[in-house]
Amino acid sequence: MINMQPGIRCSLLNILLFISGISFGFQKNVNAQEKVTFPATDSLIVTADFYRSSSDNPYIILTHQAGFSRGEFIETAPRLVKLGYNCLAVDLRAGDQVNYIKDETSRRARKGGTSQTLLDSKKDISGAINYAYSRSGKPVILLGSSYSASLDLLLAKDNSKIKAVIAFSPGEFFPGVEVNNEIEGLSKPLFIGTTKDELPYTKKILQNVESRYYTLFTPSGDGSHGSKALWLSSPQSEEYWLALMMFINKLKGN
Image (spheres, rainbow, N blue to C red):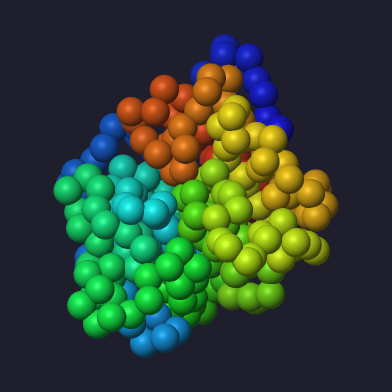
C-alpha cells in the first residue's frame, strides 16, 4: 500500500507530469475519439470510443462500472493517451449512461433480448481484447471500475493477450463466483485502487495472489469508488494519478 507525505506527493507528481507531458486540464481538442464497433464473444455488437495515440503503441481497454457507459472515461482516456497508449473505452451491456453519454451496447442487448447480467459483460470485454490485439499485435492493459474491475481480474489469469490489470474498487459482485478463489495464482502486474472503507474486503479479494504481483493503493482521504477516483472532481484524484503513473512507468520498463 502506497502512502506518502503531501509535499513529497506534489513534488513527485510534478516530476512525472513534466516527464510524461500530461496535463490535468481536460483537453477538448486533443486526442479526439472515434466511435468503433466490434463483436462480443457471443456476437452482440459492442460500441467503444477509440482514443488514438499511435499505431505502434499498445492499448489500454477501459471498462465502466454498473449503470454507467464509456462516458466514464472522457477525462481519463486523453491523459492515458499522453502516456503513450491507445485507449478503447467500452460500452458494456450492463450499463446505462454517464456524462451525457448513453450506453449503446446495453441498448442493443435490451432490444435483442440478450442477457445483461454483470457477469455477461465479460463477453464484451473479451471482444474488446480481441479487437485491440488484432490491431496492435501487443498484449493489452485492462483498466476496470467496480464490477468490471473484477471481471478484468478474472479474465487476466489465463489470457496471454492481457499484460496487466488496473482495477479500481474490485469486489465480489457475482452470485456463484468467488473472485478471490478464481484469481488464485494470478501472476501479472496489478494496480489495485481502493477507498479506505473498501480496503478490508479488497485485501480479501487479493488473499490468493502473491503480494509481489500487485500494488495496492489507498489515498490519504476517504477516496472515491471506481475509476471516478481519477476524475478532477475527486478530492484525492492527484494522489490516485501519481500512484497510477508510477505503476505505468514501472510497467513500461518490463
